[in-house]
Image (cartoon, rainbow, N blue to C red):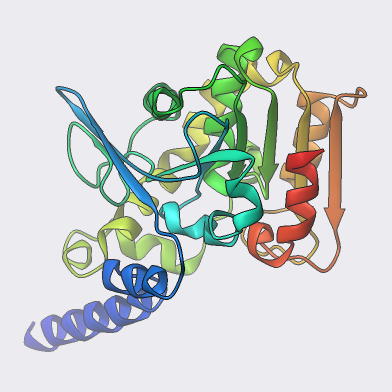
Amino acid sequence: MFKNYIGLVLLSLFLSSCFKKYIVTEKEIKQHYDTLTFKPNYKIQKGLDYKLYTATFGVDTLQPILFIHGAPGRWEGFRKQLDDVSYHSKYHLLAPDRPGYGFSYFKKKYKKVSIEKQAELLEKTLELNKSSQKPIIVSRSYGAPIGAYMVAQNPGKYEKLIMMAPAIDPEAEKFFKFSKYGKWPVLRWFIPNRFVTATDEKYDHIKELRRIEPIWEKISIPTVVMYGGKDWVVGPENFEYAKRRIGMDSTKKYIFIPEAGHRISRSHAELLKQEIVN
């Protein structure tokens, strides 16, 4: 019994150290922006049962771009775009923590939130923008179905939808050996909160995607789907699923990047920029 306890503690500490190396701390973010001539303007929106924390860049009277991160993640995952000053003079960049991650929540901190509710809450971040121009949504991985849901609910409100490495096919959800550890009650005390939320999100994702399946045919605005040939996180079935469900008309563009992995916004930032501005 004692040996089992010691083994569990050692495993917990090992997993904690492994996960933490993938986390950018608030101190590191501050140090990063201390070296630059600009800093994020943090905005907090609160309601009775929610809080939205958004890093913004650029003037709020410019066209908004809403960045929706994956899982686990935070707003800073799009720093390659947010730090590109060529965006700042043309766009108002909005990069929120998704509800359940970072400083954003719905009802309870670090709790998984449904795709529909996240879409509803993230739409509130657009209230930070004072222009009358239609927003562009840039999303990736687990953030992609949220952005798609927003567009499907109100296509006329948005100018363009971009999805990178989208995790959208309910029949192609990938599970990894380490995924199960986030479900163990004892280990959850040692694993960083965002990984606990991501685990809960993953185990509900198939059900969530099946529930929103009718949305894809409703996406009528210009849409770009990008996928990397070396992506081991999201399988190629998701890329094909997008083609089947969203369609192949002239307003849709599918970009396969053989050498890219999962983090297309970092590895192919210039290609992403071309798709945003064109």
